[in-house]
Image (cartoon, rainbow over all chains, first blue to last red; front, side, top):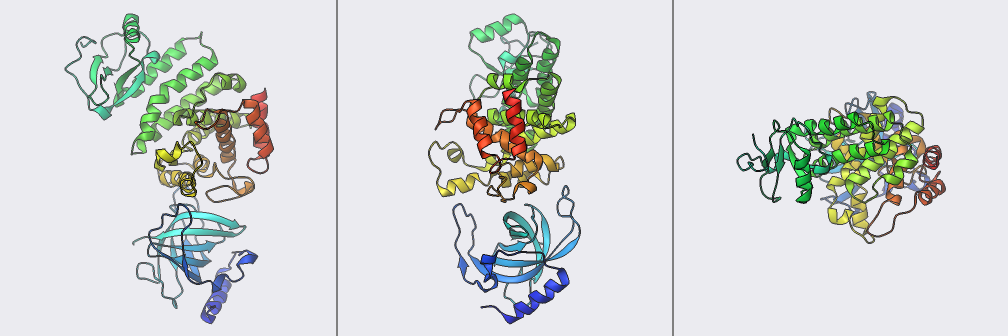
Length: 142
Length: 323
C-alpha cells in the first residue's frame, strides 16, 4: 500500500534534487509492490530480499580513480533490500566497485549498518530503459 | 659450469620457473639459465648455466630425446624473450607471418601460467609486454590480415582465443583509423584481457560441450563484470581497455550483458572487441561443432550488424579480411 508519507517525501525530494529517473510505464504501481523476492538462475545472494519501495538520496563525487564524477546528490528509488545489500533505481549507469553514500528516509524500518545513511558499493548495474538503471549494491562498513 | 651432464646440484622451487619451447631457442651464448623438470612434481634442475653456450648440437640432442620444453627462472623470463625477439630482428629472411607466429609462441607459456595463477600481477605484467610486441609486429611488418588468418591457429584454447582476439582487434582498430602505436597497444591490452573474468568460472562449465543450464549460463555471463571488478582499481587500469573487458558482450540493440546498454553507450573499442571475439569463436574448433570458414563467419557478422554489432565496425572487418 502506498504510504502518504512516502508520496510527500518523494515530492519534496524530487523538488530538491531534480529527479531524472524515468520508470517504465508498466511500472506504474512501483511504489505499491510489497513482499519477498526469490532469486533467478545463478543468483548467489545469501539472504532473502524484501521489497522496499521508497525514495532515497544517493550522494557521490569521485568514486573510482579512473572515472571522473561530478559531486552530486540524486533522488533514487529504493527497490528491495537484504541483510547484505540493497537494490535501487537510478537515472544513470553506475559501475562495479563505485562507492557512495545512501540516505534512507527516516520513517521506514531499514538501516545500513544500523544507520539511516551509510556507504554502499555497487556490485552490478542493469539498464531497464533510458534514464532507468537498476543498481545492486552491498552495504560496506565505515 | 653446469651442463646437461652436471645438473644435479642446483634446484629451484617449482613455482619459480616458467616453461619455454625448445623450438624457440637459438644456438648462442645465453644470458639466462635453462632448467629441466623430469617430472612435473619435481623441482626444476639446472640444465645449462648462462655462461655456457648453447650449441646447435645441444638443441639437436634435445629434439632427438623428445624434450620439447625447458624452463627458465621467472626472473630470467624477460632475458629469454629478448633472446627470441633479438633472433627475429637479426633474421631478415623471415616472412611477416612467420615473425608473428614466433612472437605469439614466445608468450604462450607465460600466458597460460599467468592466467591460471591466483594473483593478477603476472597476468598484467605479461599483458604489457605482449601487447607491445604484438602491436610492433603487426604495425611494423604491415601484415595482411587475410594472409595471417589462414596461418593462425584456431583451436579453442584460452591463449589461442585471447591472442587471436587481440590480433584481430589490433588489425581492426588500425583499419578503422587508429594510428597511434600507444593506443594500438592499449587495444591489444584490452583484447588480451577481455576474458580475464573467466578465471572465476568453473572449468567444467567453460568446457561443457552440450547445452548450458540457466545457472551455468548465468555464471558464464558474469565474466565481464568480474573482469571489470578485478581490474578497475588497479593502478595500471585505463578506461578504454577496461570497457573492452566490461562491454564486449553488449549488443547494439541493447540486449547484451552485463548492463544491456544500447550502441550509443558502448565504447568504440568494445565494439571492435565484440566483432573480433565472435569472429574468432565462429572460426575456431569447438568440441561441439566444426569451425565456420572465414567467409561464412563474415556473412554471419554482416547479418547481425545493427542487432548484435556496430555496422561500421563489421564493414571495416569484412573489408580487412576480404582484401
